[in-house]
Length: 308
Image (cartoon, rainbow, N blue to C red; front, side, top):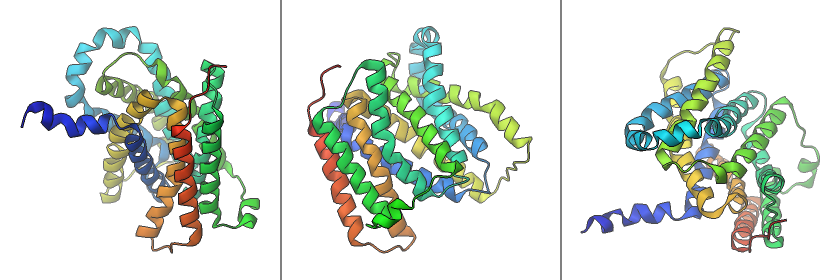
């Protein structure tokens, strides 16, 4: 077998944006559930900071050649990298973990449903990119599916949903991450590994003083099997693997086509609850899944809108 043939499966995955974006949604759904499960055991800002510093150390040996090659570009575009890191790495994750201290994982997963609309708003404001009719219809079909899953098919449940402080923190975090998603198109022309290593390292450093404040104001971090397990997962799957997949997916199809895949997070979150928490599969799960997939297919196959 030739080297080219041996590399073809990986190359095929790297050029399959919808597979990459679906994989990202799965890993981030698991991360959201873990973020809620660790409340009271691991401080939220400390989790975010350690997550990115550990992920950087893990990635560094693999990214070193690209970093050396891209060193002039890293210096030239340093402040652009700071902007990307502060929005997509530091702020979003720290605020999400903090918000999960005060709200349920289910609420956090539901709120992900506004992400495609937020991405569309930022894309319109920054780059004059509007949603086409087909993309808009797809977003709202997927949103309807998410609402059916979360509400259990009950309108009364939807009408009595309330926001708390944690929900607001997560909503602000999502608005910031939508900004990051929209501006990924102007990312510096770096290799994928050097780019990810740079923004993760910068994000971890930006969070260091916030972590120090957290630990000196009553938060406690105990190194035990659970803590180490949390750090092992959050520094690899939703960090290294998910961000490589997400950045590549957005690069291939653009922010507006990638955004509907955020709707898969509540779908995956519900499926995980059914598989691992013993919850029962009901008609509204099937209806919701069908609508989410229909909406994603509609949005991804629709023609892009012309610049406004």
